[in-house]
Amino acid sequence: MTNPAKAAAKPVKAAPEPAKATTKPAKAAAKPAKAAKAVTKAAEPVDGAAKPVKAVVKPAKATRPESHLAMVRRARKINRELAEVYPYAHPELDFRNPFELLVATVMSAQTTDLRVNQTTPALFAKYPTPEDLAAAVPEEVEELIRPTGFFRAKTKSIMGLAAALRDDFGGEVPGRLEDLVTLPGVGRKTAFVVLGNAYGVPGITVDTHFMRLARRWKWTEQEDPVKIEAEVAGIFPKSEWTMLSHRVIFHGRRICHARKPACGACPITHLCPAYGEGETDPEKAKKLLKYEKGGFPGQRLNPPPDYPGRPAPPLGASS
Image 1 (cartoon, helix red, strand yellow):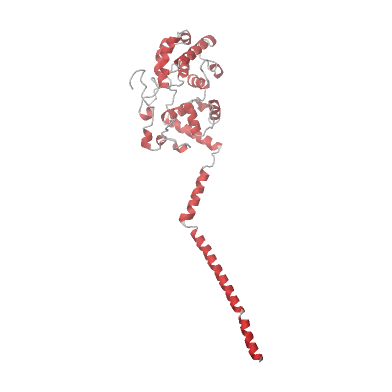
Image 2: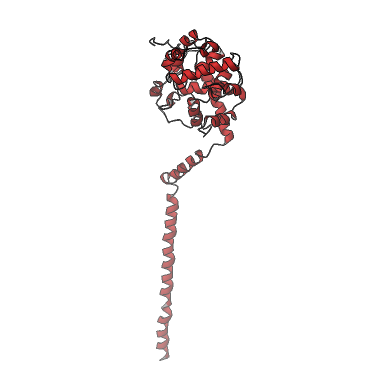
């Protein structure tokens, strides 16, 4: 009877074997998981998956803030390249002496230099000196300068500064900033125009064109003219201030306009962080160019000999 019992026990020992068999499928089940990882890894380097991620990261580096040193270097390069574009840059008001330049600059507020240049010949023919203008009849002066707009306020200013020159400065235009700004209608901008172009004293003329371009080019974030002047003065050597002003103003009037810059015709786009604000198509941009860049007359009736454009016509003449 013992032999059958042993025979019955054998199947009991055989029972655990399926348990081992069940563990093997478990290991086998893990293999597909590894295979899935392998498939995932194999899918990642595919051109369409990984490369766009890198392409998104690269622009982030490009938007990194420009250092002050890099801005200064770029600003000075802009000045050098503008010197090549406008080697003939000059004040765009006609004048023969400091007095005429001072009066013309005061009159240029809220109007174009062209309109002033068309108006001053008759004014200076009748009142050639501060003494003559100071003794004039206001209504007669108003009538002469009416084309420039705001003629009553301007008459008060130019007659007032003429009287101050006669009474306080011996009929001569002073050559110091602190004296010029005491005259009626004369601020820092006007004073630097006179100092730089009549006396050779360096100065930065911060007019609307200069302010606009200095901000577009990231030379400053200021909006106050005096603060802009101070920040830009720290970027350039003092010897460059006057000519820098002419070049920037020339560029603002001819190419980098306020409403629609001619970006596609601009020679310094590679240095301009505001490229694209205006027309980028070269042919369309070319049609936006003004004065000699667009083949039209300039603003001066009597420009310097090296001016490449056509002189402006006198008042009342057709261009």
